[in-house]
Image 1 (tube, chains in turn yellow, red):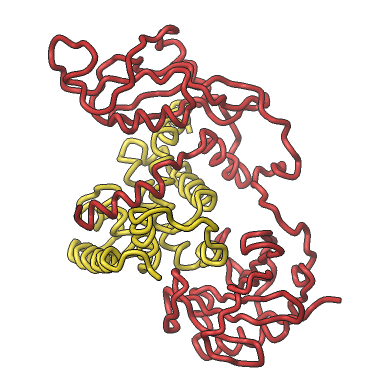
Image 2 (tube, one colour; image 1 turned 30 degrees about the vertical axis):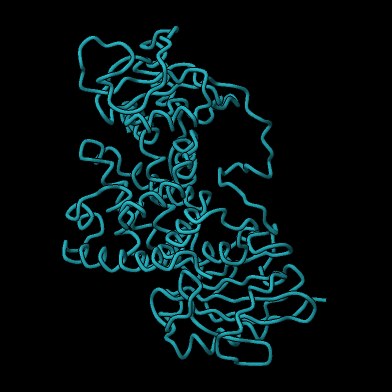
Length: 164
Length: 308
């Protein structure tokens, strides 16, 4: 890579790595530390192809790599989730809103990885249905149905509030 | 609030305070370096230098302000855009959050470390564009922090190949004997992956992943967890031997059928206060098929014994 490529990559990482990290945490349900490892791995792939993709929407490419890596890891590596369940927080939720929020996030974590990714891309990243479909390599119809089913599950969690 | 908004709010609460470390770029290069790449910081340094040249040393004292700037501090004419808040002197994370809340795209410009042992400081010293400037929504705002001397590197926490090391059990040899147990059987083609992790499952816990050939880094085929937390013992599966249960669980710990998305899991109460859990990854389970996978996991956990 040229010096200009290197500098552009640094700029890209500085601007986008936090957004990618947040998305990775939400999609794979990992701790920040584990998600950081995942984002580093995804950025390494971006870096490898940087000369070719830097002029052609590298952010979309990076997001696609991160989301797909997060889905893969979420499916293959339950260790991350096990840590969450084996060591629940000592402090109980402090109020009804926090409880509701926690119930929703718990439900989100329970969703199949791909359905969770649809919800994260649509409602956290504000991606359109068409953009989400491109990122996940599926049809717009699949995005719609996955989003509807995922939201229905989350809605149930909202109605039920904090699980007993 | 509808469910979409509530979900977004919940996700914001979960990750809104999470920031990528400034060292992300250099960490990516370190990973890459192991296979082929020459390590260089020149690119990052050049960018930083460019910021230093273009940003005035003294910035205006504009009050931090979120949102569109049409009515901001003193403009006589409504300007479509966002006034860049003054974040100089703030902690870099606070500055990042403030700029983000203002509708801008913050960038931390100082790389995390350089080859002289310097690391990024915490306080913002400059921004570009400077405070008070009007920027387009989502425009990039560079945040510069100074180089400061880094903490003395511990050879244990940062080995030469650049791969970060978590608290682990060290060199386990064949990887079969650790934390007072011995893994007496592994299916053909499965061996220790070279990693181990301590403390992720409560006190006195550790986990060791075992892998098959060609598995991507960070993945596991079989994982053995040992701890004293009794929640590791899942008694709700099929009992295959005294004190030993097998079932499939989803990402949320719920019971599922065998197949993609579930992890075949065996747990067993060991003599004393220890509990052991064995996981077959969904991919590995699928490669064996349900019947064989269940037979093998029962055999693996049966052959785990306390090491005298």
